[in-house]
Image (tube, rainbow, N blue to C red):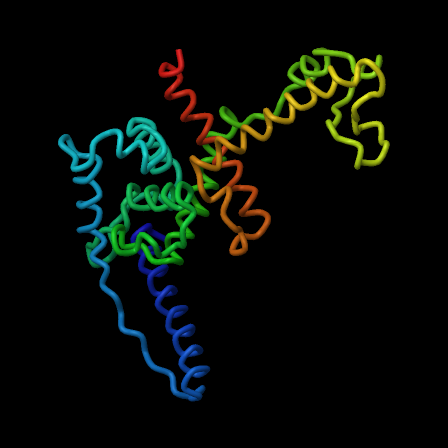
Length: 270
């Protein structure tokens, strides 16, 4: 199925869902469960909105300066365009095609912008309908395909699992309780059971030093989430509309994008 045809199907499905919801609400409020009404088709003029998006951020003299792009897209324009280019080249969902009527489907920029904005601001799917002309269903579908694409295309490089050497280097940093650990363990406090994989603060003179080291390690994890939350508000917002699999993909996508942003902007921290 072409991208344009897929867009038209998405819009049709969205209209059907909206109509069913409207009819149900009317039946509850007005007490006429058998009186259904047909929802009018909405012409979203998506081609014009692509042009508006292009002129606002991507042409040679954009409406909004680079610092506003960085704030709204959470990354520099060069990195965003790199992501869009690779995704649109390798993932069919993000490839723009013409329908049988000769009409363009949603552009890769529109779809990727919708996904990034949902990650950045954590708002509902129809928030950007007025600007990008993507309804709630289509926006959430863009996000789902975007997370799959980011994990597939960039996960191996920016979210690889730690190697045996990585783990051993962590384990060799310091002995705990006069014992050298050769397996991974969890730093915990006294409320957890006395299991071998749970490392609790020792008693005696070493306790204060160990507590300091443990607190430092725990803060590293907490700070990682503190970095993700301001950058991607979807991480800190309620996730009732997502299932566990989608939540996991969203988290991995945010971590991958964070690592890509850090690499792209590393010169700023030198």
